[in-house]
Length: 109
Length: 116
Image 1 (cartoon, chains in turn green, orange):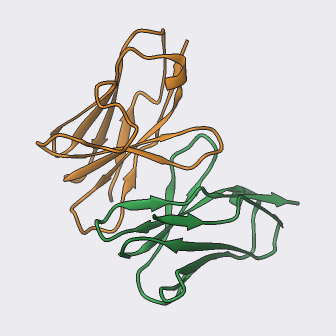
Image 2: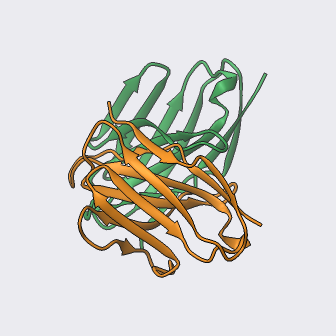
């Protein structure tokens, strides 16, 4: 079956760095997404990786290793507004998005 | 840009009634639209995929006669929850994709449905 695993919850301190991991097993691979979702709101796009390596975008970076079925989202200089759920999603061979359950990130002052 | 709107943002209805939710792509044509449901503190659950001009493809366990989906044009899809019950209360989110190989889905802001 298809499966995406990510931690349920993480806690970090304002100003620090946090890494959210995601491992996946899917039928085919056409890219991996990270989305941010604040409570009661729809997801917003953060990043997309289809090739191995690190993609940096401001305070957020996303890494992919296709051979390991592994990705991480790195958040630097954490701000209180970064408190949200972070969803990992993989596009399979049929271009369907397979969603992880999300990681709730709690930022403490 | 790629903006998707949903209407209404919140709706309260009585048990047994039907409610329609609209999803519109405002500045692009969406060949495919997706309908998701999300329970509190849970991830998105894909309900169905709809392509313009054809019948929606429902995920296993989703009742197609209860959740009617119409994708009448390249910019509009509707989800009608028929004979709503309190257990249908949820956050419904639509997304749209420009074409089959466009990697990104553009999400609407979601609709909070409460059935009393």
